[in-house]
Image (cartoon, rainbow, N blue to C red; front, top):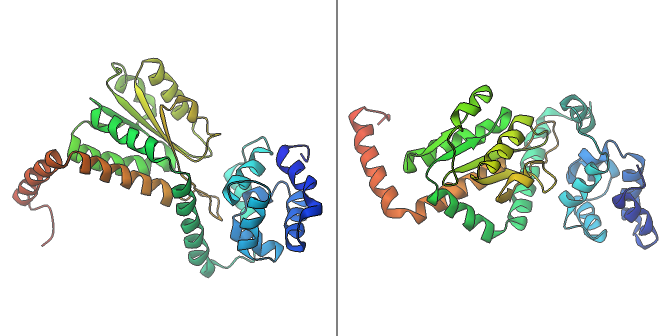
Length: 284
């Protein structure tokens, strides 16, 4: 375990560490199966140092930040943990439910900041253009990621009228039978990744379709099959993934598309308002 690069880096730099940094280093080395799943705030609490000290420690090790260090620690384990195992490693019996809202919102603020820092505006702009130029758009999002896919489908189809989320895993072949290089497939996937999402992206790439992947890091198995990759940090002190950052990316994509297609979208929304009024859709 300790032969991996991240742990070797910690060992090599120990003589240059401050007292607080040595406490963090010792904790990471002594808890290689639990520490990689702790958020910065949780690790700081366990080690009894400030959260800022944990962040500075990651930078001291020459990582981009704590999430980058955390990914390297997790990859050193070389296997995926089950939800039950992650829950056991991130949740202590003494953790109080009333503290959850403060902890999780703080984690999400960190996720949003991390995602913003690693966002490539050029790739984002190219993804927006792919959406606008696509003849048809298919969304692949299974299990919990389906919530993100449904949100994106609702608004893209509302204004573009060419978007479909493939909700039935067993029926994906029928939906994508005649896919072409004029079509775009948007795939969502976060650890633990579903095999079907990877299989579908691999298939559509072989058929020549354009692909956009929204995932959590560059080691994701979805990444090799994405023409464009948008990364979102999803780490919180829980066995679930945080979708605050991925949802913000989805909202940004929708907003950018509607701004680029301003006249078309404005006309479409005016028509819809008349239709909604006819069917008395909204409460006055």
